[in-house]
Image (cartoon, rainbow, N blue to C red; front, top):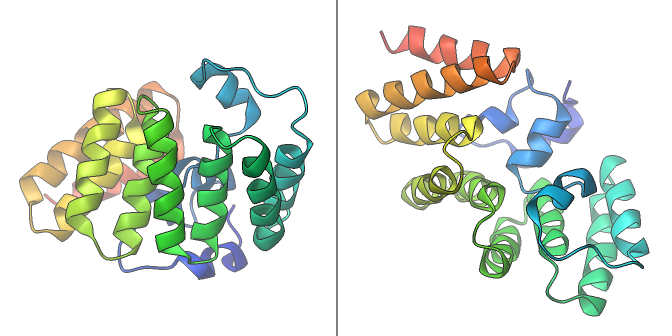
Length: 203
């Protein structure tokens, strides 16, 4: 479960699935752009550098909630490997956790520029845009995440939240239904339950 300590820097009026106490830390990391090595191997065509010690150190510090230390390591890593998506994406996550939203968006912008096919980057930027009070921009990002991956349940859920906040109850309900369906197929009980709760509220 997410500790309140982890939640405090990113509390906003927008209740995104990635920011609720019912979700595991891994869900927060995924929705805010954190790309672990196991996932990177599936997403990136270019293999990780043989010497990626700074990336490893940044990930370890991130897991320990030492976000300033993680940012420092990712920044050093990017000086040596300026075209590595994982450096920008993971640094963007740490910046978002410290409420440096503009800095996070810049990192996700660069990650998307380098690898426009990765749905997680759009979803992450969408969440940060929502946190920054930019719902229209966040919905555009969720749209692009869904275009990259039609089975991305979090993106449907997050877009539903954005649509609801903009008064589009019908669009929100459709997205919650799709998110619930995908969460169920993917055996994500927590996500499924949250989507169903929203569906019940919108009846």
